[in-house]
Image (cartoon, rainbow, N blue to C red):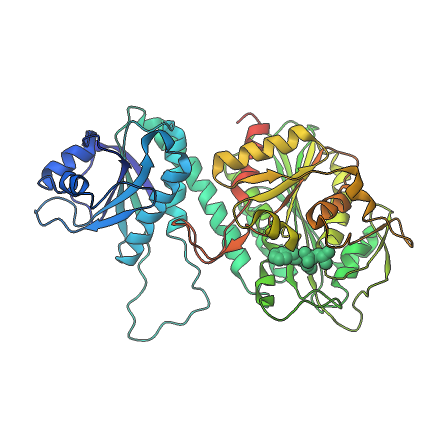
Length: 500
Ligand code: BES
Ligand code: MN
Ligand code: ZN
C-alpha cells in the first residue's frame, strides 16, 4: 500500500472514501472537519446535535453525501473524549477506514488526521499508517474464488490529509509505521499458514528470503548440524516427526564491529499436537499458531533491517513439529541439552521450553547485551491475562520495564509476572537437573523459570504470547488468526536500545 501524507488544503476534494475521526463532546467541528461539513450542508453537525453520532470510541457511521465534487463516501469514526485519545485509538480508527474501503471494494481512500489531539505528529503518522495497512490485511491464499465472483480489489493507495503544522513529522511517522505494519503482516501470514505448509524448512526459507532482501546473514542449522552442536532438546522434540527441525539464525549488523548484539529468540513450533502427552482434539487446529513467536522474530528482523537500526541484532528461531511418531520422546525421558544441563521430560506437551532452552544456550556465542524471547508457551498465561496482554518476566527488572513500556507505546501490551524463587522449586527433578513441567500452579512462571535455567549468562526477558499471538480479529486493524504480536514491540524495544 502506498501512503501519501499531504496538508489538508493541498488535498483534492473528491475521494472515493474520506474517513473523518471525531472526538466525543459538544465542541463545534473545527479545522478541515468543519470545512468538509460546510460542503455537506452541515449534516455532520446536525447528526451530532441529534445524538445520532456521538463520537464514542469505535463508533462508526457511513454517509453518502449527495452534493457533486466532494467525497463519494464519508466515514465518521469516534475517538472518544479528546483528552483520552491515544495512538491506539487512531490505529483503530484507521483500521476501520481500511475495513470500510475493503468492504466498498475501493483501490484508494483518504483519512483526515485532525489537529488538537494529545498525540505527537510522528506518533499519529505511525498509528494511522499501521491502522491502514493492517486493517486492509487479509489471508485468502488458500481460498478458491467462484468463476462469477468479482476479482478482489486491493486497497493500493491511501492519502492522509493532515490538519497539523508538522506534516513532515506525520510523514516520517507514516514511513516507520508502514515498515512496522508490513512486518506485522509478514508475521501474520507466516502464522496463518497451516502446519502442512509452514514446516520448519518453510520457515527457514522465509527467513532466508528476509535476510537476503535486508542484507542480513542467514545461518540455517539442519538436523545434522543440530546433532553436531549437541542440541538434543530441540532434536528430541522433533523426534516424533518426519519433518526435520531447523535452527534459524539471522544477523543484522547495524552497529559497530564488536558491539554486543541484542538477541531475539522466537518459538517456531510449526504444529503442536502435544506429542505422546497428546492434546485434546477440540481446538487442536489452533496449534498451527505455535510458531507465532518465531514468525514475529523473523518479521521484526525484516523491519530492523529495513529501518537500518544502528545496532547489532541477532534473531534465533528454533523450529520443529511436536508429533507422536514411533521415535517420539516419552514422558520420563532424560535429555542432554546444548548447555549441558539435563532435563527430565515429565510432559511432552511442554516442548516449547525445550526448543527454547537450546536456542537460549546457543545465544551465548554472540555475547549478547540482552536476550528477549517470545513464545506461545503456556495455556496458563491465557487464563491469567486473557487476550488483552502478553506476560513478561525476566532476570533483569530494567529490561522487563523497557519491554512493558515499548509494548504500551505500540499497542502490543505486556504485563509483568513475578519470578519468585519459590516457583523454581516446582521444576526440581529427582532424576535430572531440572524437569520440564512444574504442574498446574503458576504454570506461566514455572515455564519462565525453566527458560531462565538456560539463560544464565546475559540479561534476559521472556514474553508469553499464548493469549495474544492469534485471535478472533475483533479489533478494526486485526483479522481472524495471527495478530503479528509481538513484532512491533520487539522492533520498538530494539530501536529504543539503539537510540533510534
Ligand atoms: N503451545 C502450548 C501452549 C499454548 C496453549 C499456546 C494454548 C496457546 C494456547 C504449549 O506447548 C503447551 O502445550 N503448554 C502446556 C504446558 C504444560 C504441559 C506444562 C500447557 O500450557 O498446557
Ligand atoms: Mn505443547
Ligand atoms: Zn507448544
